[in-house]
Image 1 (spheres, rainbow, N blue to C red):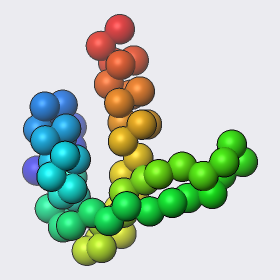
Image 2 (cartoon, rainbow, N blue to C red; image 1 turned 60 degrees about the horizontal axis):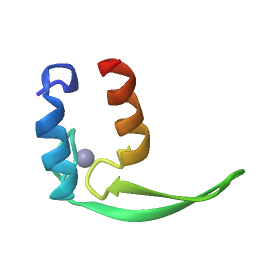
Image 3 (tube, helix red, strand yellow; image 1 turned 180 degrees about the vertical axis):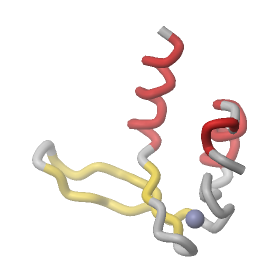
Image 4 (cartoon, helix red, strand yellow; image 1 turned 30 degrees about the horizontal axis):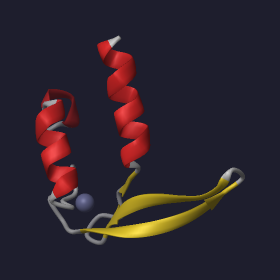
Length: 65
Ligand SMILES: [Zn+2]
């Protein structure tokens, strides 16, 4: 299912269940070091997709504004 037609509610549910938005593979917590410090992301062990919940939430907030 393309991400574009996936509802925000479905994506949030998947994130809570730690499932990849692309392939439904299991997501594992990962720490990434950035210039601002370390940030917590989720990475799919199946397809390697990196999901940053904070970025996703910010994107939804902008879309709703
Ligand atoms: Zn995946």
